[in-house]
Length: 538
Image 1 (cartoon, rainbow, N blue to C red):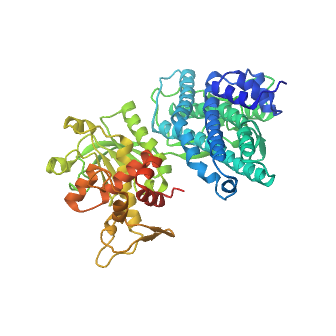
Image 2: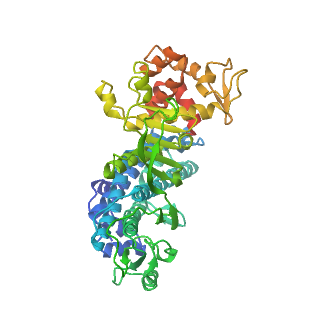
Image 3: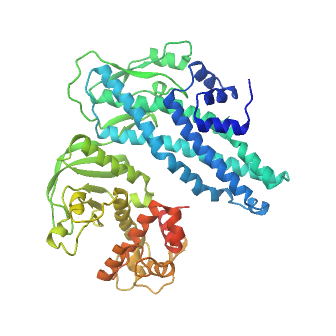
């Protein structure tokens, strides 16, 4: 077996060539990797996934090495040094997140396409697909986060060992740089980062494909599935037994027949049916989640409902027929106009879920329903000058966010507003209220938001979860701002001039923080501290 240099192996990873797989396999004795090699190595798509993960690992090690070389030995010896690497490591993951989610989503869709071809039925995608594809994508991101966290722990251990051995800073940096090709503890095993990445690339490709296949069978009424092996000499005894004990009820697959049965498993599900299948698909509300090996109640699409306008300031959308997507696991309901049917409707809901999943828990907890309206705000109809270009609103009483039509805004000269910005701004209003209710109420005032309390108290700080928090207006004066000397946006300043409240500056600040935390904290350090305290960011 030929040896490769540390730097050479990292370069091979970055190039993403097939030879990288063989280099990895040459340096392991694990049977599973030998089997992958005998099967011809990873596919081209699996190599793409492997490369994305290894680019994250390589970026981690480059940053860690640079930080170590720029630090004195006493700084390296301080507790929490590796914690300072956390935000940069997280950014590396975020930089690759869209690519990885896209890869996993494509594998899920390939499983669906294969299932429909086998059933001779047209392609269909429902709310259950939208939900489960997201769950599989989230699961993959959690696996990559585990690699990142384990690598950071190993960096800390390597630094401590180097200091105990009397190594110099360059020597410690050199040892950290080599962690990319050295075994790191992963559960009960010692695996190199590239080995873990290889297992993820192969195993999670199979899982995403199988998940898409299962749901597609359900959508066309298949009640039983067969566990099908590759039928070659590599099939393990567990998989042979799973195949022999089938078929299995599609909603009650035992753990011994869950695909993937083991890391790098190559088995698939096949539909098992005798009767004629329905020609029209239905959206299942209960599915087998292959990431947890348990049944999951995902809600799915409900019947059409009519949202009535009780009064202008309560619901604030015209009466319309809406399709309700009820995602019970997330405690979230999304209303979409019936006229936006089919793929267009699902894409809008998927965009909302994508942003919702990324938000800190305290933000998610403040919203129960999101209504994507096909009209503009009723307040804009009644008082067009006062409520011009309203993008969305947050209703504390119902915890509902109403998002209004964009084409109306653009027709009136308003700039295009990004959906993520809209949601972050409106969810921030919910945080404003939730946080404010935890503070003592100034005399004569009831249930005020945090920003409202800021302007009604003479206290120099509040206590929140054991931490002292500066009133928002004091943070504004400390940080300053491009509008009026203290506001982060023109809208925040205009709202203050009209109502004397700082709530819109807070919401726009959270919006800007969510877009780029590091940049925001650099420009507005006091606001950044407050926001991170409330959002639970460490």
